[in-house]
Amino acid sequence: MAIVEPMTAASSPGYVVFRQVGKDRWQLVGEVDRKPGQTAKRARAQAIEDATRGKAKPGEVYRALLRSEWKIASE
Picture (spheres, rainbow, N blue to C red):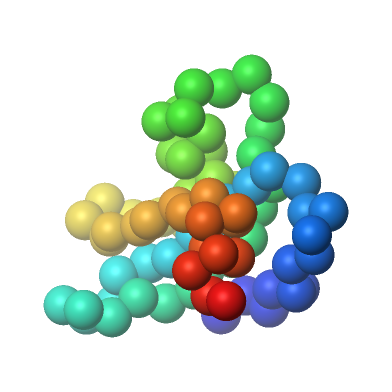
């Protein structure tokens, strides 16, 4: 499991990535910065690739949430 540093108000745009580990259970994989110049769909896919270091396997389910949305939801 990844260790994630606390987010600050000045955090750059990015994603918090989770992997589904059960019907209603998700495991935090990591947090990555968003790479500029990509569509939202491509940026989410890139975030999952970066967070898993390219080790995501076929059939595994991942979600990439915008860092700002995750921060709001966790307050």
